[in-house]
Image 1 (cartoon, helix red, strand yellow):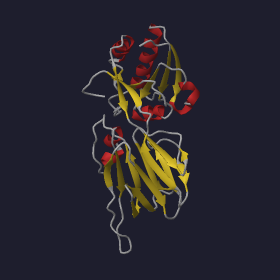
Image 2 (cartoon, helix red, strand yellow):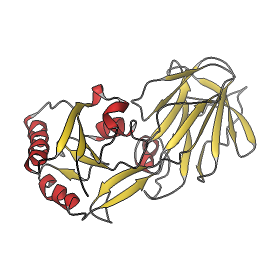
Image 3 (spheres, one colour):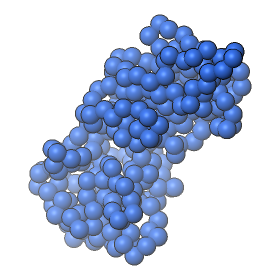
Image 4 (tube, one colour):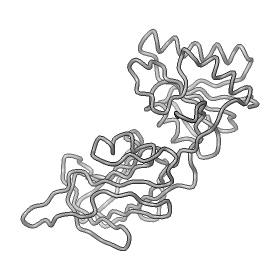
Length: 268
């Protein structure tokens, strides 16, 4: 890969290990005389990502997810786990111990890119700005309140009460939705999943049947609140997109996947 402009996104180092990892990334880029811009994850904007040959995300999965919200083209992303002892690093394919070696492989075109599917969402006819790499969460504005809504799926409309609805990608099926009882999908799957969190059934509330399922890439799922205001949020870290009762929220597969730098077919 010919590298002229790189963006390095990082989380503020809180330990010696995290500082050391970031320094190795910077020193390696300097060694190969590659121009790069350094930015904290809190300071990101669209302009920073323009005309970049590679984006390097240094931190944990939260930093990687935040970075993904600004990429809408085929710019590849390399995740570097700044402290594997304390960070899960599901999306991270490098760390301090192997960054130099793996970066050299990138320079020699000895790497792969893995296509990670993402989701897009609409409130009414307006598309929200972020694409979800893990999941969208649809819930009451006050999340300790029960959401009352209609779930729209495959020409069916079901009245429900619950703690909210998760709509997840294949990558995200290893995250929140897994903890909530969902199914794990193969990482290269073109399908996505929905799960209703804590569906409520009482004397005047019927049992819900549309509570968990796998959807094909051409399907979509909708939610219309019966009463009250709701929020839609991508990957648990974007801004909360608010909507009102009777506004339709719709989620479907995006045609803009994220391209992850990888080095081994058996892993990410």
